[in-house]
Length: 327
Ligand code: SF4
Ligand code: SF4
Image (cartoon, rainbow, N blue to C red; front, side):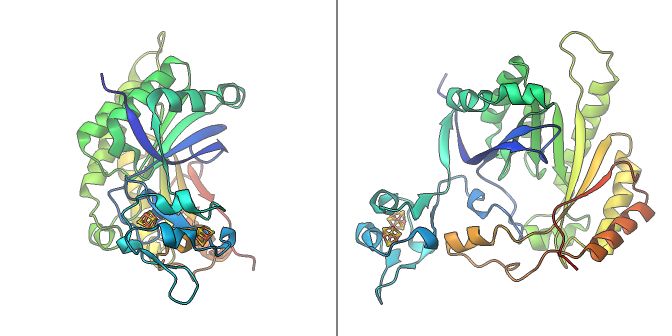
């Protein structure tokens, strides 16, 4: 069998929001959505990219000399980038003495990635955590992810899948047997608006969510036995100003969860907007429509929470996360 490999954005250790307990989260490259607010723009293409960090640059222009395509220029002695002309050859990364130029990800073999995350196994056991695959969209590298999670479970590690939900049904069902916990995004309930701000409607996403819910119902109905593993489901909604963070959308999602998923959702998390990813867009040389947005204020968050509760949400499952602006 050929060696399985995956493309990752990064690995984060000690994460506390990507499933229960203290976890290691593997962010995989590649995403079928194009959310305008994307927090991991470097993770959208499966292929590697190149980005540039201004504060590390010493202005030597070695990268310009190394670039074979003219994607890097210095018409007035300062570096000017044209990402559209870049073929990701990596010559500028090699040439840069200060690591201001870097690749946006890395390739791992299955064995190497398992070895890497199993270094933290003692922490998972001590703090009730495990390994989460996130992205990008991990279902886009389903063959690798299924085997990765299967091998982790065999080692006694709790596994979680963090998904936007847009993937072939076969990808989802190949991974669910090796998944202990699913974090599933519902961004917008209005499919037309979903299409406008993410590039896809949500019909297929909601169908996949119903598969997760049905799997959970069937699996958790079985009597506990040796090797028995239950499945938990958390829903996540990013609160994006003027987009998802509206009373209409939060009320609609709340009603949907109440009517279709109340028996299976352990937690519904409203994730407050932040602009921490702005520097990623700067490094990629790409504009970001939310660059000038501030943190949301507490009063807005509180009112959205009230909307969610009024529309049927269980106060015990509703959680708000993230920073808010100081009043
Ligand atoms: S090679 Fe590196 S340090 Fe030199 S100009 Fe290019 S990015 Fe800056
Ligand atoms: S990776 Fe892109 S920017 Fe860098 S040298 Fe190659 S073509 Fe030029």
